[in-house]
Length: 212
Image (cartoon, rainbow, N blue to C red; front, top):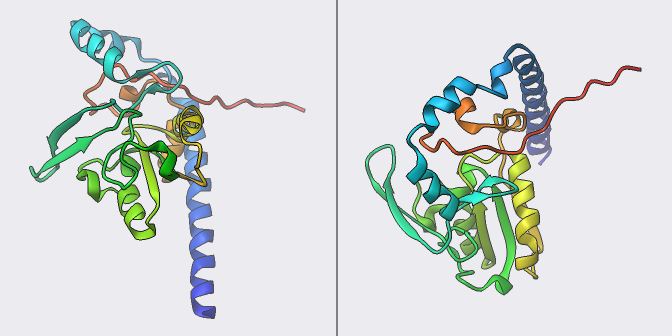
């Protein structure tokens, strides 16, 4: 047990070091790259001829607070990186299906929010970690992870959804060290140019410097 305790302490110290160095790198990156916040030429070029796609985005994914969200009441298929088909299904609140909660928010005691790892990109509905958590604990788990989200968006999404789940006892935030950079980005396709959706504007946090 003492050996395990020492291991976890060392792991925590390592993670703190990673977060600290990542935060420092983020600040330096932002100070030296003005286009991290605005890239008018890129945005204008990518938005040309997108009127139909924009209408679909407004109908299915747009959210005035977080920028975007999961679609509701749909099921679709897409291939993973190896070409294997995966099914993505969502309930009326936009939660990823696959857990025992089904369509009954009252039996949800755990809500998971976060980015693509929480959502379960390239995983079937019942393969996501919130779905597996529900099976392991026999609890109702609502998976509200959204691809591309940063921590700020995830917390705001939780605040939006909490009233719909009256019996929540635990809220899980999926996060990794890279996500700290997303806190300062206002247009996701600038940060992640490979993404196909060009309408992903988002809330962000600014760094304020105080002089004594």
